[in-house]
Image 1 (cartoon, helix red, strand yellow):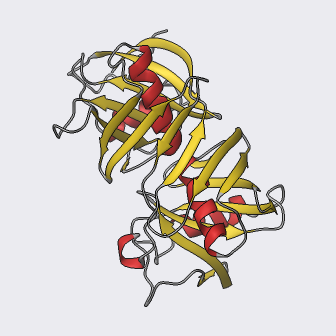
Image 2: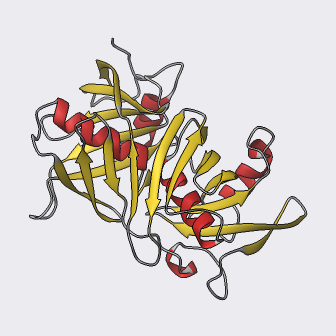
Length: 288
């Protein structure tokens, strides 16, 4: 396929890309190792546009490593053009992409990101398991404005108080417990919490319903993208929040609109583990 970007760009370029998805959370993955890539916020928005561009929740760049003990560097851009530090579903697609394109034959990949190194494991069953690292719970490191660390925080939204969990999985998350995700106020509260003043860098917002100690339902309003069919770091954040509240066991199935992930967390400073699929949808070239 081929699409043409607005003519205001005089330094046009032709880029090869791969469209991928993890549980319906979709990505445009670009190899920035074997081709020259010059992207700005306007070009990112054009690529992500579902009517005039390719269409995606996020654009992923595969870059050469920036440290000798990693295999690649991983950059993530939201549909609004903003760059973020982490994306769990994207990390799985990243691992599948580099294997499918022959960029690496390793079963375990060490990848640098803006928020630190992550490890990606390509399993024999076709799934990808990701060591997402330990959660960050200290408010100043999330970042979240609070006087002290707490399991739940009271926050003012829509004219009243609401209890949320706040943590970071390389990106900031608010997690709200609801009775049912079907009637969760995602469209109403998602934008309010995403841009709430107590989250200086905005937040991803998860709406979690607990089925039992080993199974939750989740919808996520993602920072810079709106509600998506799945969010890997959102699933991790929800399980951490549920574990800290004493609601969940160590291994939890997370059912999102796009499908299921399995999240494991032993607690304290242990890493959060995520397992799930990563699928190639199609390939193409686009003129920017």
